[in-house]
Length: 274
Image (cartoon, rainbow, N blue to C red):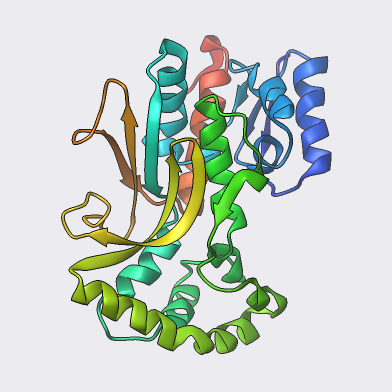
């Protein structure tokens, strides 16, 4: 019998060891949405795990429905040098910033609304802190061949990490302290015919995550509120015509669907089902 193991946790050390054990001590398969084993550890750990590409699938970890890991990996394999990647990957942050543009609610009110609608993690800080987006940056950069770690990502958090000390209800009250700041940012953007976007970038081999003013004619401006979008510039696909990957956001059902897709791909042909 061959087994397909699934890891959809956020565990760290114990799951890294489990992943390595499955791959090195069996002929079994592993599908994972857990970003930690391939982002928080060394480049060697990443290479050792992803060496088993036919038995180890990580697509669910980063925008799988847009097929972005496959795309950058293929560019790397054929030698089409990836120059720059610029993207918006967190639909939660996109929702919050796009709601600011309506001038109807303050930043803290929008975050509370997003929490009540189920658009955030149980503690909204988990959406607003830097770690989740930095892990995605590291994974994507590594698939382009870059030898990077989480410490190489220059992050300008959306809000100060001091707010992480509070439980979610206290957190939602405390962040009202930054309402005026975000109101000023949105006002500045409007006056300059720009919009606010929290952008992940790989530019000239530098990794960064920051709040950026984006031109109104940019592809990053034209996002609808539930979308993710990446602009990838390579030797072949240069600006002003980069490769554009746009897709819907991932809620729980989408992640579960993704996991099932990759399990299906690993099943023997004789037991695949529709």
